[in-house]
Image 1 (cartoon, rainbow, N blue to C red):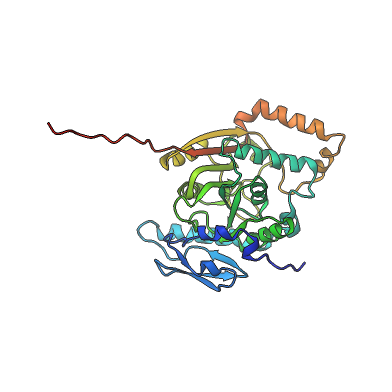
Image 2 (image 1 turned 90 degrees about the vertical axis):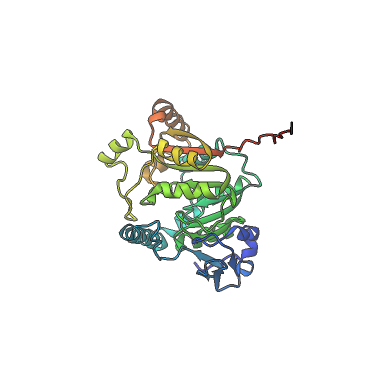
Length: 339
């Protein structure tokens, strides 16, 4: 299928102003004419970033910062990211990714809606707020967020994912901006957005907490993180073959601990609330999901899933952390009088 990508004017042009150099967070020359630009250049460090079909490719330069990175660790991380990006550029069912959860079985759609509901519980109201959706994939969560009234900037390391997210936006008449970027070096200034959001993206990273730190850096008000939990039930599921230890993209599934995520967010000035819940589904719905989505079985399936979560949810396989920035106390100015 051949489609024309939406222009910058139809994908939240005002969000373009939030973009910055991923290396130094400096201003980018050419950003105002993004739909016509061939490249963007940082005014501070001089780094240059290509623009393809109006999509800025804002990946940090591949040089090693000797002050903060070990050479071998950096090269391993770079190779890991290239493999991830290459997989999601090509080895996916494109139409399913662009459309999901539309057209999927009813129970599958309900499960994803439940995950989204949990992910925003405790956040400020989304309407009118700017939200960066990191590891955004093909735009499913960007769509959820946009339909809730948020002004959404979707960022993913895979150019293929970003192109699919733009196609979703065009089909669904959504006004979000999608760019290529790395969650560990987000192309945004400090406190550029109201809310930083991720759903099942950080577990692809070799160092998920690096992504948490970046999300905290760019968020003014709040952070929402939904990821696989480091849970005993998940370890059992892996042994039984019900859950993956390694995904098809080649990455080890990094399962997060609530205490680790909360600690990183607290260090950045956020008050975090962590919850666990139980939920299982395959990425692509199969025969069982379709059967349970029939009108005769769907109510009972929902009831059973709610009952199971009520029973084991606190030790469940899913972790959701929502955090709000702690206001800085304002103390009255004191005066000393001369005696």
